[in-house]
Image (cartoon, rainbow, N blue to C red; front, top):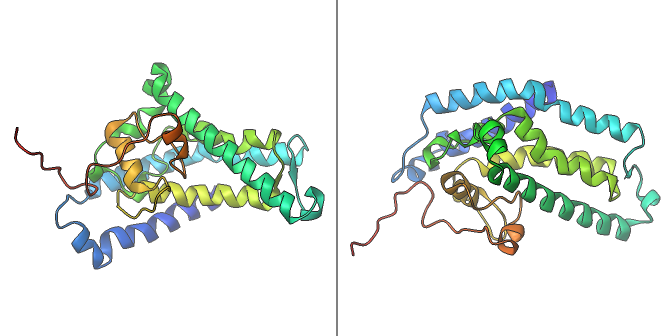
Length: 236
C-alpha cells in the first residue's frame, strides 16, 4: 500500500509540475482551460479510496507466483538464454495488450459493467477534467479488471519475475501519462492525446500502450486538433 502511494503521489507530482507549474505550462494553456483545483482534489480523494482495494491485485499476483501456479521464472538460464527471454517477453506483452484492449472495450459495451463499474472513471469527460491525478480515480474493481491480463497471461506465457513487476510499475507511470491531457505523443504509441479522445468520445481508443489493437478492430480515432483547444468548424 505504501509503495502504491509513493508511485501515485511521486509520479503524479512530477507530471503535475511539468503540466501546470513549469514555465512551459503558460504556453500550453494559452488557448485552453486549466483543470480546476476542485477537479484535481476530487481525483486525489477518489484515487486514495480506490487504492485500499486496488492494491489487492498485486498481493494476489504475488501469491499465485509464489505458489508456483504461474509460468514465472527467475533466471535467464531457466528460459534458455536471452533470445528466448526476449521472444517470450514480446509474446507476454502482446497478450497483455490484447487482453487489456478487450477488457476495456467490454467495460464499455456491457451496459451493466459500464454503469456499475466503469462510469465512475468517465465522469472526467472533457480535456479540462483530465489530469495526471486521474490515473487511478476509478472504481477499484475497474482497475483490477483492466490490470488482470498482466496476471492472467502468466498462466500461459513464461515471464521473468523482475520483468513482470517492472511492467506493473511501468503501467502505473503510463496511466499517469495518458491522463495528463497533453499532446506529448509519438505514433504508434497510445499516448495522452489519444486517450483524451477516449474520454471525450467513449467508443474509441481502448488500447493501453499501442494503437495496434484499435486499428485492427476498428476503434481507432485521431484527435481533431490540439488537445483541449475548441475546434473551429467552418460554416456551411
